[in-house]
Image 1: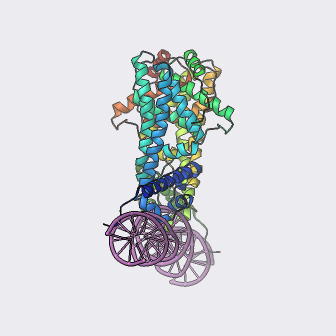
Image 2: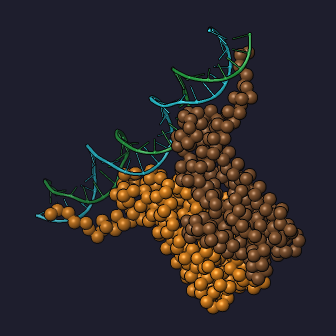
Image 3: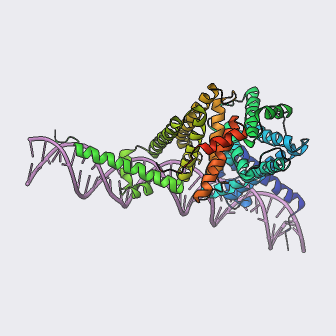
Length: 220
Length: 220
DNA sequence: ACCTGCCATGAATCGTGGTTCACAGTTTTG
DNA sequence: CAAAACTGTGAACCACGATTCATGGCAGGT
């Protein structure tokens, strides 16, 4: 035996792997999925194209991992926000607005992960992200129903619909929300309100909840 | 001078052009945008690949025309349904449900036209479709607001959000709506209800409207 | 019938981007 | 320091799909 991977080397490898993922993420947030190409990503990570394949067997795997990472981060943020809320009712706007704000901050990435298409393989992979977001919402909707804050409804369907509404309203090609923070904030509020009403909370009440929810454009 | 295009020939050319468009539409509804490839489309239209280029200078143009045609058809259907309604309030569920039902009937096509991505060029072209649908809804929303049936709101934003909600709920990758007509019908109703609530109609009233609206799974 | 163009054809060409691989450079161990 | 095992490189390879074009027909006019 003549070689065993040292701790130091392991760290370097891990760092490089991260660099690749980060580069991919950057690319996606800049030019969408089509920009996630091996050569450019490699360049950004300051390695050779071939090297990428030492870390990921195929591009699909790279994208898959990217989707997983982003999905975890985003749903964690939503969960955190929801759990910080005083009750299941106010947890709803908290989760919704959190998703909305974060989506707005990295809109191209969100769009790429959620909606922008690609080859079938990659598409399948993105399901992960979509699902984790929807599931997070679904959980909150269920809780609110159980507590009697919402009329009975198909929570999964409502959750999916809300994801669609938020994405389309905020970052879809029709979205006007500029980079202007004031406008963004307004858009988030408007859509949160719309989402709450969609779930069956009457307008007046929903407005109250939206106002209550701080909706700060906080940084991570 | 020795040749002038005859009426008969013109007709044949037009027919062939239509055949190509139809083939493309078929392909899109079957395998999404990636299936809209020159060779397969040509084969379906029973012509050679090269011939397609006699009718459309580039694939993008073909897709563009397809998008235009579909957009016109769909928004016309929505308009028709809305105008047949007794008033601006019931025009809303009519337009919404019409879109929903038709989207469901040709889900892959709708998805391809609306959400599935592709190269930037084609993407730009699809905007036509998206916009025409959203605009149709927007018109109805405005009317309902003017008549005092809805609270004041950003009609364009609401319209975009609704398109997103409907698409995501009905034909998104998370949608469960099977081909089972009963389930489809239920999904359409559920989402129409959700959409009405989102616009600010209270649950009970919205339910009434949904029931009123025939929501038949009619054919064109 | 016979020129004169338009029309259709489909094999060949091109461009793009993922993937491979023989070779060069590093690390680890004895 | 040499051998062994691994890691990095980037040019070459491949597959795929849009687009072109030389060629073979067909229709329209004389």
